[in-house]
Amino acid sequence: MTEFPPGGRRWGMTVPLTGVPLAGHRAVYDALAGAGFTDLWTAEVAGADAFTPLALAAAWRPDVRLGTAVAPVFTRGPGLLAMSAAALAEAAPGRFALGIGASSPVLVRDWNAVPFAQPYRRSRDMLRFLRAALRGETVDEAYETFTVRRFALERPPAVPPPLLLAALRPQMLRLAGAEADGVILNWLASTDVPTVLAETGRVREGFEVAARIFVCPTDDAAYARTIGRRMITTYLTVPAYAEFHRWLGRSDQLEPVWRAWAAGDRKGAAAAVPDALVDELVVHGTPERCRERIAEYVEAGVGTPVQALIPTPELSATADALADLIPRLAPA
Image (spheres, rainbow, N blue to C red):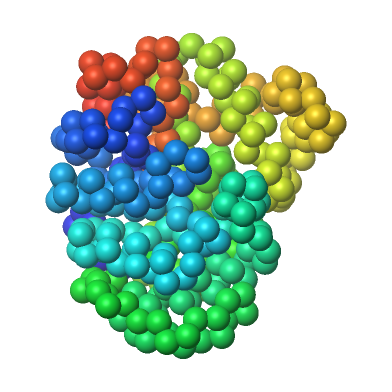
């Protein structure tokens, strides 16, 4: 996989930013690139889709690397996902990475009316299909979870994008290490990184380790912990994330949260989240302190830290506040 920037360190931001319309993101992208951010990455939940913000960035900032973290493997058919990736790879040749992942039952089944079945096998099959399709091959294959008959991209990218796989637990981590060009991590502490990466096995040179890191740049610890508790109860009660943190050894901290959530007590679940857990999983403090915490992930083995910015009272998504904040979160 081609290194971008050549010889340099990656430092990413999740886009689009809350409170800024997509049409207004050119100034945001300019500010990020000017401050030293090398990468722009998207998520896909219920806001912007994974590809549109990056298509804008491809046109506006030809010097910035782009990535999806992630495009779900269930919500688009194989051919459509390949076409979306190929189009963006054509628009940003050599500077786009396609991150895919299973997502969650809520997003897939409840919001997109698609059965959420066999997420490991579906991820594996989509990874193998995309590898062939984005090389321009004609794919005529009965995979375990879907069948594709004589599909070939009419516009295969001159530079096929590297494929990254979102992974939490050992089986998916081993798949990423064996067949993907990199892995995307999420909802973990910097101290968890070595444990997680050990499961990828011996990987190829250039294997990318990206991690989404939730960042709440405020020195109001009470505010950050309140937001962090809400986020933890929303995410870590999802079965895949719950099992991930059981595997990481956090059952004692999270069992009261899971019990309250299962009983329908949402407020009780949030109240049961310990401050120490929020402090581990959500980076908060002054922007300079946040930057130091992000560097701890890099030291632990993350090559592409991708900040997911949580709005704060100080920020309020105003242009002046963003202009002040972005350089303070950029690489030192």
